[in-house]
Image (cartoon, rainbow, N blue to C red; front, side, top):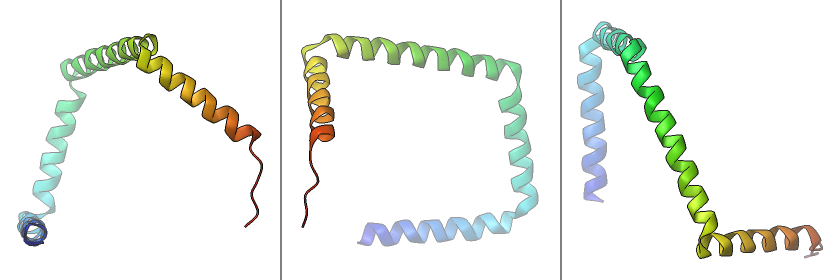
Length: 92
């Protein structure tokens, strides 16, 4: 409970201090961040990172599907799907 109160107090202090800094400073920071994000080098790096993440996801998914655990999960999901379509409604 004490930790939650400390967290809420920190948020409140951050809000007050942030609002004192003003909207102008916020807009300046936002504009600089947008410039950095739109820079071609950053966009290229983001594209490379996204491609690598997609590749790793696909490889991991394929490895899981080929493993015994993946086969069990697949069998279980197939079993659940088939049982849910053939189940009857229960009246309470």
